[in-house]
Image (cartoon, rainbow, N blue to C red; front, side, top):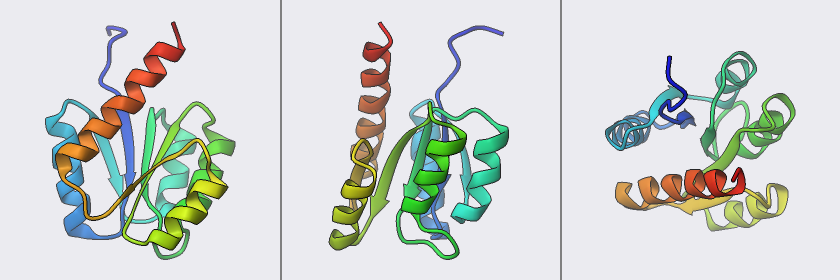
Amino acid sequence: MTESHAPRILLAEDDDAMRGYLTRALEKAGYEVVSVDRGTEAVPRLEAEHFDLLLSDIVMPEMDGIELAQRCNEVSPHTKVMFITGFAAVTLKASKEQPTAKVLSKPFHLRDLVLEVQRIFEDQAQASL
């Protein structure tokens, strides 16, 4: 197996249609995507597998994205976090709770999402030089 693997993204999004769109756009851009429909389903995946990025909706049933990001920091501290949300007030809370996480507000173009994800991986690559 070669060292240059596609970055792995764990997508937590409770909206089925949105999860499908995001998964397809990210896979088309060359990423390996594992998608789940709730934070409580994402945690065991983070514990068992390696992910380069957690891409999470903030407002979800059972466990919101902020709580999921906090769990991610505990069980997989190397995993970057990016939030997507349609709620401005939630964006402020996310920025306060997870200051290193990028927040992308809905609605957004899939192209913008892919560009933001690429930027995260570029920053990560430069930081490791």
